[in-house]
Amino acid sequence: MLNVNRIGVLREVARHRSFSGAADSLGYTQPAVSRQIATLEAETGAVLVTRAANGARLTDAGEVLVRHAEVIFAALDDAESELRAVMGLEAGRVRLATFSSAAASIVPLAIARFRDIHPKVELVVEIIEEEESIPRLRCGELDIALSNDAEPTPDQPIERIHLFDDPMYVALPVGHRLAERQKLRLRDLSDESWMLGSTTTCPDTRMFKRACHAAGFEPTIAFENDDYHAILGFVAAGVAVALIPDLVARAARGDVVIRSLGPRAPVRQVVAAVPAGYRAPAAMAMLEVLLAIGSEWQRAGQSCVYA
Image (cartoon, rainbow, N blue to C red; front, side, top):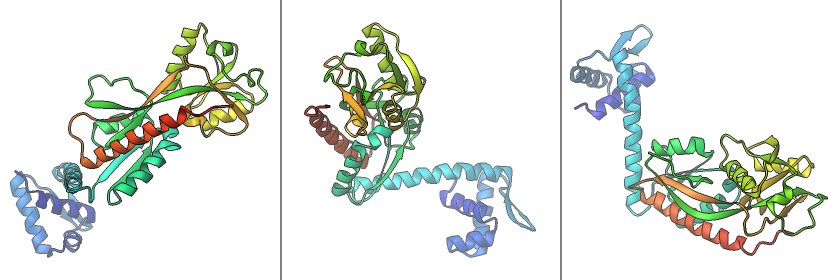
């Protein structure tokens, strides 16, 4: 079996392109680095490094070994992080991905609470949509990925944990003919032009179209945009109307009108996608915070009145 320490020496030689640079970085003597590389070459049966006038260069075999070394050392770093997390959450890391409307609403609340409870755990937060976050979750680059799509992912070791329901409302421009009505039905807006998210990637758009078909009409699409704040700008200008989630509606700009679609309004589910099976204690702690924040957010929404 190859020696991990010697592989680390080879990686340093590759980084510095010299035996002396690797020796300085590692705190070794240059002869010691040379011995480590010679032993590794004997173990592999391949020449890994060649010396040239401009420094040390990896052979093709050396390049292969260093490429795998990066994966090996990244995995070791993750293992050390999890071990620290197991020892009382005095350290560790949680890598969280969130879609944009959650990033502007519940995620800051969850981060603030988590830091109060576990100040020594590192948080890494990225704002990316599901088509990117789920593949990265599956290959171990993320611990939790927030999603507004509750549909299961076939043949993937991913579990989706329900956090809360996020009802949809209609956004109208000020002065719209229906703006004074407190409650609307979707079919009341069948003649309108609509702003939607991308039809190929946005689960909200798929849900909206299903609701329109159930109400008996095919919606007219004015434009597509995946940024709800941009969509509200178009609505405010009178270009179109839009269906927006409660996560966005509670902070809507003042020049649009938000109206309920009644008890049969479309509702999206906000979920936390996590790897099936074992989860690090730090990730479990973040999941508990997200569940609590989601429950509080939903209860607060039940008392909201859009007027």
